[in-house]
Length: 283
Image 1 (tube, rainbow, N blue to C red):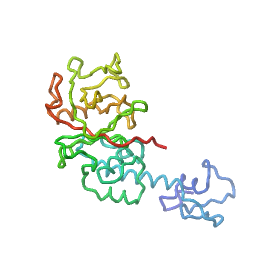
Image 2 (image 1 turned 120 degrees about the vertical axis):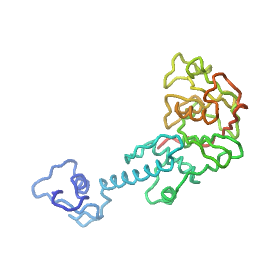
Image 3 (image 1 turned 45 degrees about the horizontal axis):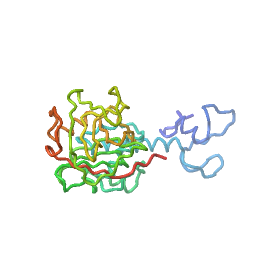
Image 4 (image 1 turned 90 degrees about the vertical axis):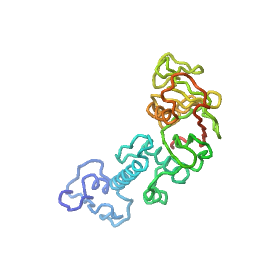
């Protein structure tokens, strides 16, 4: 039946959705509504909800457009490129949240509705800006937003250098909010290939879920920005801010301490940390 129509919206899946069929079986003399997504049940003349197969298809197509735009805007900031697959999962929603912050919109991990004002702002954007909450009076700074689970890195009010995915403290080990905390120590952990075994949460091996920290930058009495093998889009640390290993190395190189082999004080490089926001689990 579908093949008889010169209309690419009339397909097996859309006919099934239009007629509430659970499979591809039709009975003799059964009437089918083949005018898909016209707002009517053409067998009875009654109004009906939009064809869900086409709604899902349109939604995926719009998410692909958003993902491609996000990749364009975030290129060069150190964060991994999104797959353009039309799936609005946690990684895409995290990126949307970061984009909102960099475009002056409220932080949120919700999907971005097609045709909404904020989507229009996203699509019209040609660059990302330093978020309003960044401590731009500092020479070099890190802004961690716990709503988005995103880290912005920059210099003063002129340079947005990096945007990284991060994972902050899980329930019971929440990361403390910070105004302008100075990084006071860097430990390259050269005796263990960069992996410092946490004294508070020790672990015998370097693996994705233990307390070991890759080349930590310490602030506020033992919290750290450190590399980790596991950086999910939700809070999973014991209070620190995790970065992917390559992102931690990029940050250290930018600070000029990537080749340092002994622990040094923060005054040698200068970095200020601000932490804002509250993580809201998805409904």
